[in-house]
Image (cartoon, rainbow, N blue to C red; front, side, top):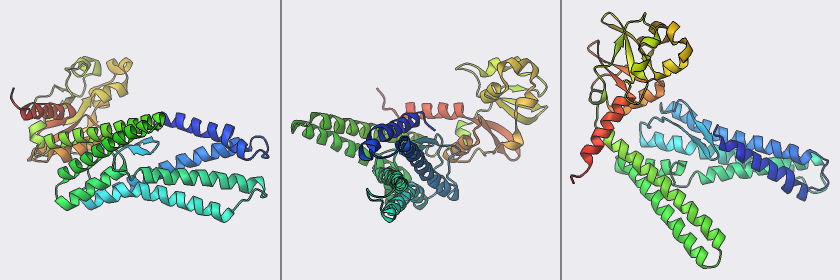
Amino acid sequence: MHLSWTLIAAFLVASLGAVDLPGRYPGWPAGVAWAVAIATGAGFFATVLVHELAHVAVGRRARAAPQSVTLLIFGGVAPAEHGARTAAWEAAIAIAGPVASIGIGSAALVAVAAIGAPPAAGVAPQALAETLAVVGLLSCFVGLVNLAPVFPLDGSRLLRALAWQLTGDEGRGGRVAGMAGRLLGVGFMGAGVLLAFTGDLVGGFFVVVLGWFVRGSSGAQARHEVLDGLIEGATVGDAMERDLPAVPPQVTLDTFAAVLIGPDGASVVRVMAGDQLVGLVGRRELRRAGRSAWPATKAAVAMLPIESLPAAAPGDGLRSATARLQASGRDGLPVIEDGHLVGILTRQGIGRLLHERSLAAQPPR
């Protein structure tokens, strides 16, 4: 859960409990307004959580679910999200969250209508109706906002899926979605300027800021598409590292930690029993062991056993292999050819290949 949720929840609860509800229900006993406000904040959080779980549930069916999600106000963000296999699955994953939010919000508003708590009703029906009404409206709002074609909202993924389906080109679908978001942002900025000229300076300013944000986020999507273009057609063999340092299983971490630490350090160290690779030790394993324990911790204890890691082949597409590496949460994956280890696919190796391709793509000066 992102730290911003603390501020959002505090603002929502405080505004309801201290200002809105006491003003509209002056006859409520002390504490009821705050109880309703807290329940509303918890309910809203639950609806956003369900929104994101809907994405994850469909993503699992599509074998495209991220390993983790950071929960934000309008949904979540995945640090390493797999790409969907088809445009149809992309659309299904994208629409799942808004459908869940709008469905929950609509159900809550229908319940409010069924309760129908008039001013003469008791405190309990009024409190329940207020809680459901605010949660329902906020949930519907989140669902509808997410349908906007603005990266990283779900509407951008829907537009991407539609363009992908119509053109048969996944990359073009992403570019269409990014362009639409940038145009929408420019439109908002223009509308804000016009609004300011009509005399509403504050409203115009906020619309311009919204447009600037929309345009900037869509630009981020465009840069993501550039990275996708750089990785297009690359194989694991292009990015894997062949000459990584090797240590025997019985040595302690302090004897080779310096090889991994620092900006120029290796991504991982191979743990070799003779000519056989038995595991990998990366920076995460060093951190997990703790610096104070390095002199007493052997590589065989700290390493990731090779059998626990998904393997790749030199001819595998780098995009899918990168997704497997990200999903594993590890620093490297063994690359196997004809039953023999030929290299390690590391984040550092992938970054080096992207940097080289980026320089090669630049026009000569």
